[in-house]
Length: 294
Image 1 (tube, helix red, strand yellow):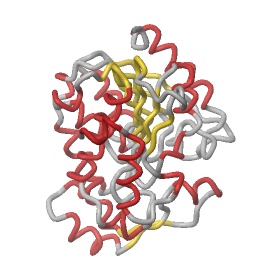
Image 2 (image 1 turned 45 degrees about the vertical axis):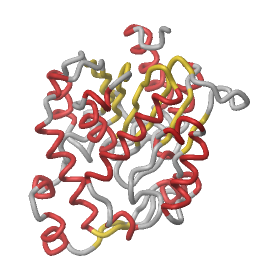
Image 3 (image 1 turned 120 degrees about the vertical axis):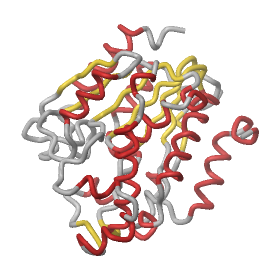
Image 4 (image 1 turned 45 degrees about the horizontal axis):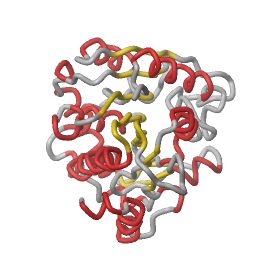
């Protein structure tokens, strides 16, 4: 990790070069508050995307928050993502957990304190990370967008069972996916992948369901839509109620031009009409919790 502290840009770039043909927009990277100085900021922002997605998922929301906070911004990339469907099929929950631990370490390297922002299954993984004292060190707060604590699909609980990587393809078929809904979707998501990729997703949700969130002393903001057709917002509310560091819920309602599934609740690709409301709600919460204070 000493190389990461010495030159985090070069360290991340070398990692991504070794990972294979990662799409340029999906690569791990840092957006510095002052690109010329590349100095640590009092607060850094770490973004963890959701399943099959990438850094493009809710942009420009993370960028706008980082700019408003004067924070360095780190986009991570979960193993298997941003390449192709075959790579998704080779991912594992231990690899994803390591990715999030690494992302938080980068956050500490570029900021005195860290604000982690995560969407959907990224929030699932961030929750698991925050249960560990080592990985939650210097984390000042967590913002979860449409967090995935229960998938809204019949039989979803089967994905978290031992042997899911073996039996899921036999139950629901070898692959999953469909045509991208728009050009941004095609660029920022892996829209077709083997169903073996669902096994670590199910394992992550099952692990988060067992996680002792009441022991997490980090304040959190849960941004969700009760119209979410992908994950169960009611389960997210229950997790928020048990959250040890105190959690608030910001509920939003997608409009006609936003994600019809009510899941990706900010960003130009799916919900441009919600970005401002979500941004202002997050900034208000940060101010009230004193998270941006030096």
